[in-house]
Every structure is written in structure tokens, then in C-alpha cells.
Length: 78
Image (cartoon, rainbow, N blue to C red; front, top):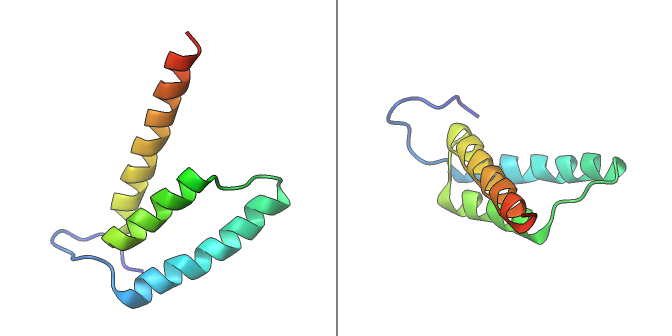
């Protein structure tokens, strides 16, 4: 995949297919460590695929989702 460039459009079908192929390996690697993606995590990845987000956009989205989860946990624990 190419790095994000100003004005770069959405990812191509081939790039999305490569991301999905790599995700299978990442799932297997996580499972070896006893870690599994939740249904919510999977939904975020599927949404990003559908939106054809670039790697930088995906990183920003993952950070946003992670921060939102932490905020919800902090509120729930008070």
C-alpha cells in the first residue's frame, strides 16, 4: 500500500483485499497470545473497509475508538 498522500483517493479493491488478507494473519497471531478481537472491533474494521479508509485514516479511527472505550470505562467505574 502507498503512504497517504495529499489528495489521494480511497483504497482500491486490491488494497482492501490485501488488508483483509493480512487481518487473518493478525487474528491468528493475537489468538496465539490468547487475545481475540471483539465483535465491536471486527465491526470497526469492516466499517473502515467499507469506507475504504487510507492507512492514516484507519490509524486515526482506531485511536478515536480506543479513546472512546477508555472514556466509557472511566465513567462506568466512577
